[in-house]
Length: 210
Image (cartoon, rainbow, N blue to C red; front, side, top):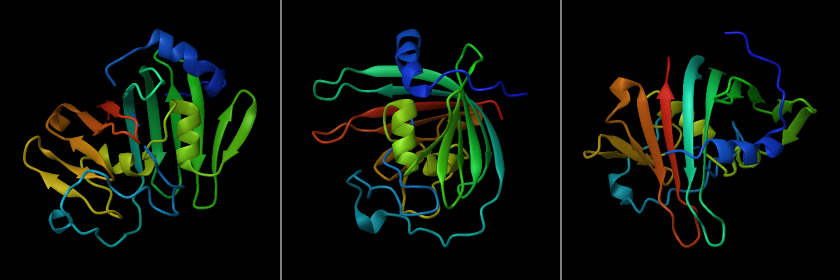
């Protein structure tokens, strides 16, 4: 599929997306790709049950396509907000490209990363960010663990951080998120971060086309 040129600045378009696409569904704090890990898990899982992180291997390149639904729960005086968008991802957790597309077919933004930098391209040009957390907060309204999500969408925990397997539902917890794999055979996956007094609750649902 040929990608259209970016036409909308993500900050300006968030309000329109939220108004148009209040939905069931996102993507967390995440450190810059290739650098320090996201915040430590807050799931409360017992450390002795956690699965030890596996040694890092050379990343394999992947191509993923689908839709992402994000629901940001109300937090303090901040109201709940939801949005949906399509995505095309190519690359790996070290270097890659993520195209974010509105459900109307327009390109919202293009995100690129390497071990040395993270940037977003829109109709105003290229914008560099200090980390993927900062970038995702600007584009989606909340910092999300995009690096780990790449692995979650393939049905596995991110190998560089500990995880805890779940029996019901089928899945695992990692980085304070619960990943439900019970519908992965239908190319669907949910990721939930429970809200606390200091943390906004987030619900993400991924629909994979490939």
